[in-house]
Length: 358
Ligand code: ATP
Ligand code: MG
Image 1 (cartoon, protein in one colour):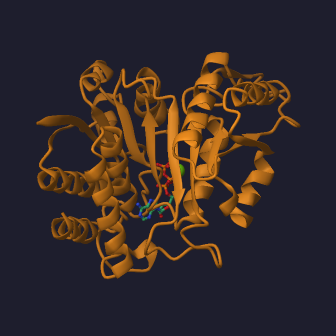
Image 2 (image 1 turned 90 degrees about the vertical axis):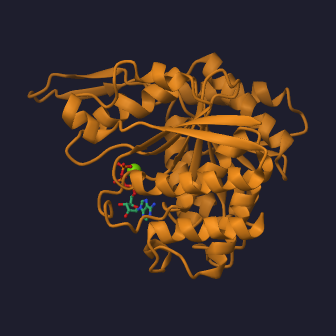
């Protein structure tokens, strides 16, 4: 029997609540499927760990994670710990060390969720954003100069490498070729204002596009692209973007499919040389942390993406169906979607539906 070992990193705030529900759903899915088992090991790393130890994870943290098939992460960051400490102390080292250079974020309207965009249906809102995840604008290279003087200034570099750009673009074209319905790539750029890195990015799009002659490509400025997400979401198939642009676009993507409580993401190492990591797009949401009302849908969707990545396609599909059945029923939905159910009640309802369906 296949076994998949999963490292659980619930992290901070609502991360803890939503990962618990996702774990329950994964357990039920594996029991019912019968073809595989899942073993979990939980790590209490995050801001609370930081307050005790002065670091977000132990020094050998990455080594400990290396042996797992996947990492399932809740959220990192909490008031009192500066964002750059929580991000650079845990999340970004994992993404970089394990060469998770692809970030996949589906923008798909689920069955049972009313579209925030007027007159749009599930068929109109169904595409994938692929974000470069390891370099680009989030380089951590730069500095502050002349602080305290009238010349006070800050500089931050963006790093786009041939290897990094080619890898993400080729991956995006492969996705468009394999699973894309419209065989179309939309690439985000801003080469009119950003005059070195973005023309470089555009140049490699043309180059990789030549390897995939059956895929239609549009290169669109990020500002216009934001507006098209709202006015013509049905025109997209696979959208590919740099680290920063992808980050911003996918929160917009989350908005048009019903909010932060729904949007999932996968940090993928396509070669499977290292574990990939699955995490909701949302953060730790300190405003609702500890109240038991966070929406677990984003995390449960992530659990399905994780199983898909691990090759358990039937179980991944069953989770998506059970989740959408529960959403459609509208009996158990959290306050962000207009309901009154708790995080746990939604998780339980999805587990129950899974039992009924498999
Ligand atoms: P971080 O800095 O960790 O990203 P943040 O302050 O940006 O945190 P997010 O967690 O990204 O906050 O989400 C913004 C807001 O969206 C939250 O304050 C919360 O009100 C809402 N929200 C986010 N996730 C959920 C969820 N799973 N369920 C319900 N509401 C959510
Ligand atoms: Mg945030």
